Amino acid sequence: MAYRETEKMRNRKSEARKRIFQCAFQCVMKGGFRNAQITHVAQAAGVATGTIYRYFDSKEELFAEIFRSATQREVDKVAEALATEGNAVTRLEAALRQFAERALRGPTMAWSLIAEPVDPKVEAERILYRQAYARHFEQAIRDGIEEGSIPPQEARQSSTCLVGAIAESLVGPLSPAQAESDQTNSPEHQQPLVDSIVCFCIQGLTGTRR
Amino acid sequence: MAYRETEKMRNRKSEARKRIFQCAFQCVMKGGFRNAQITHVAQAAGVATGTIYRYFDSKEELFAEIFRSATQREVDKVAEALATEGNAVTRLEAALRQFAERALRGPTMAWSLIAEPVDPKVEAERILYRQAYARHFEQAIRDGIEEGSIPPQEARQSSTCLVGAIAESLVGPLSPAQAESDQTNSPEHQQPLVDSIVCFCIQGLTGTRR
DNA sequence: ACAAAGAATGAATAGTGATTCACTTATTAA
DNA sequence: TTAATAAGTGAATCACTATTCATTCTTTGT
Image 1 (spheres, helix red, strand yellow):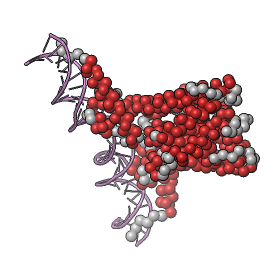
Image 2 (cartoon, rainbow over the protein chains, first blue to last red; image 1 turned 90 degrees about the vertical axis):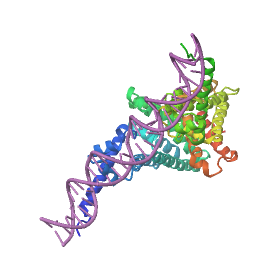
Image 3 (cartoon, protein in one colour; image 1 turned 90 degrees about the horizontal axis):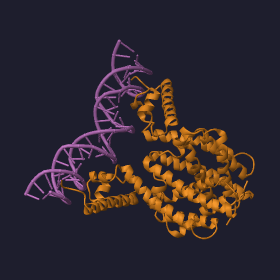
Image 4 (tube, rainbow over the protein chains, first blue to last red; image 1 turned 180 degrees about the horizontal axis):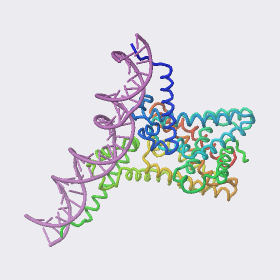
């Protein structure tokens, strides 16, 4: 008897997995899912293509994991903004702002997460995550209804509308075509955009202009 | 000199083009863009695959044309609803209702037009058409602002939010997974859905509950 | 040093489906 | 009838990448 997996090896393998994951993440960040081929990822990570398949079942699986990781960050940020003190409306406004501003700050990745055409398994994750956002919003809306800052309504439905409104509003500004040419990406130019999205959304919820 | 294209031939060719187009349309209607391969379309139309390329430059071109044709109908319906008598809010409400109800009545095609992952050229059409919807809404919003039924706001931005909110709200109910199982597609079940979408949207515009 | 087990390699393979093109058939005008 | 031209055909080709696997290289325990 001879080889048996040792601690050192386990570490090395987990390092390798992490490195592959990170490099794939970078590839997506740079050029979207579209041109993040396994060959590129392997090259970036300094391993053979076959090696990737020792750590991930398939390309879709790898990319689904990347999608989850990247989107979970955003969901957490939204959840965080919703978890602060203050009434529901204020917290919802902060969350929407947070979401839009972060997206505009990292437009390429945001576009990949929100609007890039992707493989079915990744698309499935996207739908799941849109629901995750909606659930967070939904809870805040219920809070608002209870405390009286938001009039009674279908919280589930309204939350879906929020997600749709903000996503659609960002698709244009985030799209690669847009990104390259003009300087719409400077914070000054973006403020009014964010403002009017938030304005519409809050009014949709509360029936009150701000 | 001999062959020169005659009236009869021109007709026959235009017939053939129409037939291919119609059959492709049917294929998409039945199973979405995904499984509308050229081979299937050719089979359905009773021609060889090569023949299709005499009438259309490429698959993407053919499907882009189908997308345009199908979506233009919907845009026209929305425009129609917005062109009736009454104040801007009433007209916008009618248009949103129209849109949602038509989509829910033909869920497979609607899903393909709104949410199915598609090739880049078709996706480009989709973005264009979302803008087309938005422009119609935008004009109505401007009317509303002018006549005083809608408070002043970024009409362009609000219209984009409308498009996003309604599209997102329909993605779930229209998705193939949803469609097959339950009987959410009976008009009675859909009414509350449509109502709450419209409610959110109108409130987002006017700041008034209805 | 050696054998057992695993990890890494990357060229070759495979799946998919759009597109081509050499050839056949049809239409037209003289 | 015939030559000229075009339309139709569909098996073969091509393009693109994900995935495999026979082989080589490493690690480990005796």
